[in-house]
Image (cartoon, rainbow, N blue to C red; front, side, top):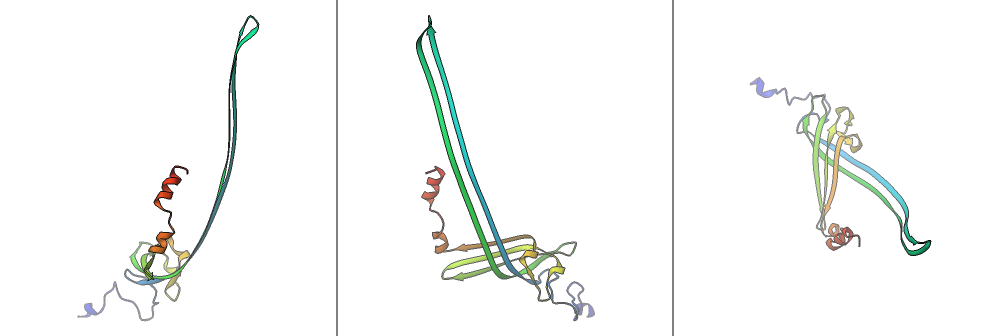
Length: 172
């Protein structure tokens, strides 16, 4: 009967923390991600080729032929992007590695006005990084994979149309 009251794998002392530590435990991740990138390029090329030939007979010019090719190219571009994601999501401990790190993953789905927003979080957590409130910042996740995807009519309207992609492919 005593073996049914105490299970070593699931036992937690009354004085222990309420922090996630085992498979199935829940941990709160505060996603606070900022990213920005900027690239620019400026290209200029010039080319000039000339080929000429002359046929002489008895000191006088009989025929002259010449070909000239010129080419200029100027191009440039600039790309700039900034992203910010703020979310709080609960994740589940999927496994515990040999060194004690917790492998976690979770998903949150929110639908507003027929627009679905989905946040997925995966990563590896060191137990020492978990706060007393059983939460962790996303910047403390190792091997983090954070995706934020929107689906619905507004999201669809922001995408380029198929015909525009075809014209861009042809450079038009």
